[in-house]
Amino acid sequence: MQSVYYFIMVPMVYIAFAVFFVGISVKIVKILREPKQPMTLQIFPEKQPKWLWALHDTLLFPTIRRHKPVLWVFIMAFHICLLLLLIGHLELMADFAVFQIIPHEIFIGNGFVGLTLVVCLLYLIFRRFQSPVKDLSVPEDYYLLILLFLIVLFGSEMDWARRWYGYEELAVEDYNAYLLSLLAFKPELPYNTTFSGHSFMLVLHIFFANLLLIFFPFTQLMHSILALPMNKLRRG
Image (cartoon, rainbow, N blue to C red):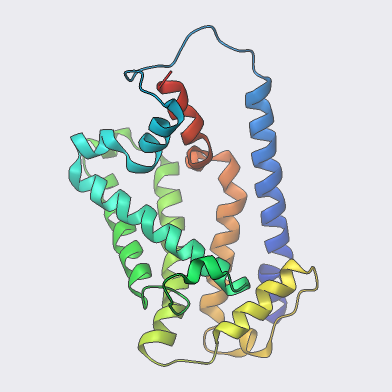
């Protein structure tokens, strides 16, 4: 079992990031090498500055807000919580002063950010089973949402166990040591990381995160990278 843990937490992590970065780079190069089209994709009234309005369209989803306000609330909550969890993961690796403008523990939100994200993902998953969304969905839509749900669920369970139930077998220092060892290409798995009661949740969290990184360049998740330039084209 320890060899399986080690593969998921070390070699698979490096493989996943390699596929992620190479896949995205290849995709972007292919897009840039495509012949330019004379047509425009502009569908919105031209406003200045164009990049600022493109950023507005990318971050605030105004079309969804106008036509599907309930969905907009869940999508905004999803993206805000995702950003906060990303900041939390960065704080696991280093003490970034810019993130501590408002002093807080790692992770921010005392476990409720993860809980909110779980609720948002459940909403997004179950709406896929209702028409007309069901009629427009493809298998990839379900796979990606379920994969995201599993990543968030197992990651949040570790935070809930530590915050809400005082289960301290794995501390922030343990995660920090593990992540920094990966960054230094001198991977080490502290004893608590592989033998505590948290271990199966940590391994599953990392396993599903690895899968997401591997699949990312080949799925519609690429919209997170291409959304801004596409909205710029729509603004003219």
